[in-house]
Image (cartoon, rainbow, N blue to C red; front, side, top):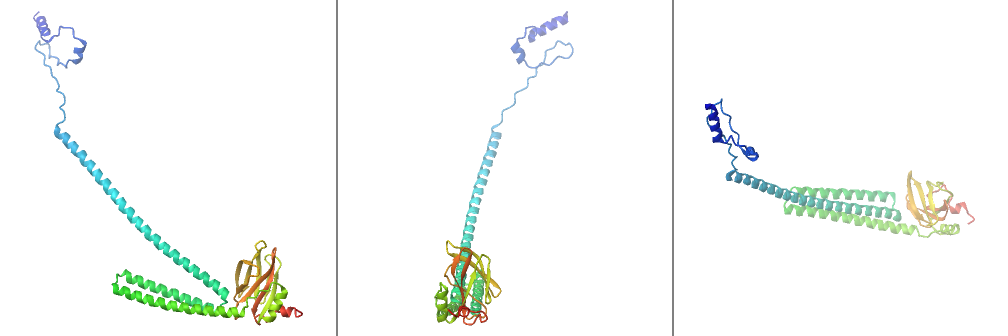
Length: 324
């Protein structure tokens, strides 16, 4: 009985006898169960909610974020500056390389022009073998002296020589260039003299028919030999010279012929009818002249002019047809 009354009193104190509501049951904190069957008061433990972050930790976190943003901005600026400097350096280097390339191209073009002019001049002027050898030797010496002068000047500049030393080197270079100019002027005079002599020997008259060739042979101090190449790849030997027909172009009145002389083969491409072609032969005092005065499909004919008596064992146009 006493136990029943104790339980009733406990139920009355803690509300255990009431019908618990659904919402209150959900929100009620956990209650520790009493030890044994004692009717003493029950102890309830309630857990406190977590404390909010302190202002100090928020400031530290904000400061770290700000520092990271600043570092990222500094790195980005440094990267852009480095990229800009690298781009400028690359552009400058490219400009320098382009300048050097243009200078080399200009020098190569000038050399090619001079070489072509010299070759054409040699053919037109009729330089002898000795004159050609002298001109080539002189050109080689000029190139060697120019290279030595340029190398010496670059060496002096690379050693950061004083203004006086640079002026001295420049003066020496100018002196050598002046000497080379004088040599070139002398060579030009020799070529002019050779041209004058060649023009005196080659009157420039072109025989377009056999009768004109005979008349030209009577009044000239040169020998004339007729030839005929009746088909493509045909060969004919005239003295020490062999002619080979490569091709013809009747529409343009042009032809291509190979010339073998002194064991060397040269090819004259796309030449016109009645156009004199000059070439050298060992032992000839003046160039030999080749003229094609007739052209048809896959055939040409004409004549070769040589110094008097050069092809002594071959009948010339007057000896072959004395009745003319």
